Image (cartoon, rainbow, N blue to C red; front, side):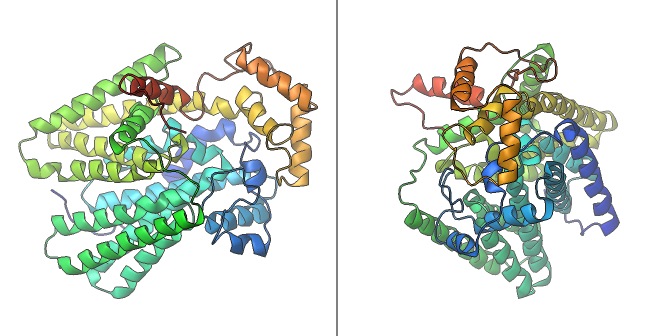
Length: 474
């Protein structure tokens, strides 16, 4: 059953915030000075007033290379960061870690209000922070807007809970405005509206002294707003097709991508221990739900499962492993909430902490390898950035200073023109490179693909066993 706990002191939240910042800087230290990657090259730059206004009724990306979407706040976010930081890539990554730390601090506060103890709540946040498929949120400057969406989610939840406590209409209005604003950041933030409603419904279910009628009206407004936005998005971009996978297929895909918080790709003995060990832990914890005698205690874990399912809904339109912040986070809090049952017994409490620490250490270990994809000498970085200089995206709106730096960067690896770049891409296909960083300037192919291609390939093979159609995962 949920427990009602008051908002913690500000000093406690500040300490937790700096714990997350320190942790983020610690696990990302080696990659802070890595160069801009891929979309960063042409998205983080100045924009004209006409382009910004056009993003409200057209694509946020004038080059038209990216997936179209109504993202004017993302455009403003990219522009404002460029004005602040220019070409200093370290500042972008420090800001990304700060934003992600703020998201997890606010979420920790929300989970604590529903009864989760501080140690379990903080450990769950650290586990999600260090998940392999959340790596992009800290290193890939463009993807900082995911954490910003998470901040909108938490702020809207806290404002709704505040309204339910005080009945002040202003809190409800600002909660709704926060959710609507998140839609102008990214279209996959559409899941924030039902997630906020789920938080309010859980609050009502746990503490029934609250009048249900305002919550029902608020829920209807949320779903109408979501429907209106989705209809507007289809009207503006009628050629963007929805994902042909059904919801069950998509959920299976997400599970296979986030399993162990680090995917399924085994590359050495320790990764094998971590991934297989996590799978055993996950199934053991899930089966243990059947053994809980007081079923009311399952309310919190079941709410986390519901949030996990809701946060996967964006996959009905598209699937990419760099938009798994919410599913990964609710999976972490589900595990932490189940393990928190062990705190009833003194030895069991330490077992629960031990399991979460095992997952956390495994995450950090694989996170350290996943960063290699963004190493200046990795085949992924050279191939990605080469596309904007000599490949399909040559001619994109890359700032002149950055473009000159990229040409110099590529030339250090012998890539000075389109012919050299084509030769390099063919060499990647033949797999002639080492799989670990070598001498300075020596090109290597990292063990781990950055976007979960390995996991998605496995799922595509799984789908082919039951269907003649090819998977539409992209």
